[in-house]
Length: 484
Image (cartoon, rainbow, N blue to C red):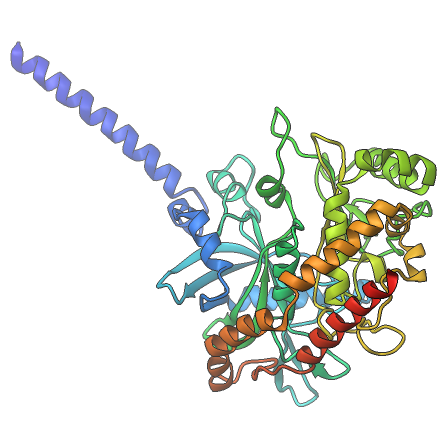
């Protein structure tokens, strides 16, 4: 009897173990999965990886590995979009593997990452062929999406894992190549990342940015794609890092403002340029809602519309300004943007900013982005052809940027802006600080770029940077002195 009882216990144990093993096997090796779910999970210290990624003293390489089919699919998809709409702004995601390594000894890879090219005006095919069928590779800006779910069904294990996956503590990651304007590269290379750094030092909420070397591995072919600025996206994860949610975990509306379908001046001329982008149909809005949609739809945009109407009423704005916008952040952004000579921002080109409506306070938070036209370089020069060096402290053109106009109509804020200019020139806006970071980047990356013959600019150079810092600082201080 005792042995019979023991036999039953052993059989029950084996039955439970078998069921558990089968369940685990079905979870890890789901039907029709190309890779196991176990291999899709990223078990790393995300905050540490985030810190290492945005450490500008850390040498980094990122290899984007395509199968031949996935790369050809990217080219075909972009070309088909161009034939339909006359632009390569196709946002179809293509499956790649990310291989990361750095100078701190970290190395890992992430499977089934979504890849797409990005940029409104400079997006291009990464590979073309000439009339003799000779291949030419081209740098292009791109985005990696770590939580892409591809064709997995919503009730699958793969979908569940991928939908929640983060890498570097991020859902997505942006890569910008060092562009050329009028046939000249920005040889300083770090200008955009340094500009993000200065906004941050000035107390403005912005993305983190760093840089590294990018390779495209296409089948068995490895191509050095060159030096890239690596930028944290402004998205839901960005909101989580920088703002508090409400009691149930929700965040306020986030709008991306560009000159896509009209100038984003924040004037009341907003009919037809507020909405939710439909990239697959080539429909994009100057004020594009980035979150809080239901299946990509939204009935109204009253929060933004009310804000625009309120700031255009000068009397109402003057008495309610502290309720409408985080004034201090906006003034700091105006001051550091002015020093950087950011000629493609809200103030000078009605472009490239986010408005986040804080879910707790209801205030608008101003978040600048796309800082590749700074420090004496870019496609938007001032009328003297000097990249903003001689911009007035208060320009008549400010009247077109409605929020700037209304803020500067209030004396206390004009004075606070001047105070920030003085503070930033004294503490952050210095050539020595730029040169230190430039020298570190040059030491880390130049030899690799040259020896491996990467695409794009390979040799670091200081172009007109010293001149820019010197003349801009002198001009600012002289103009401030002339006010008294």
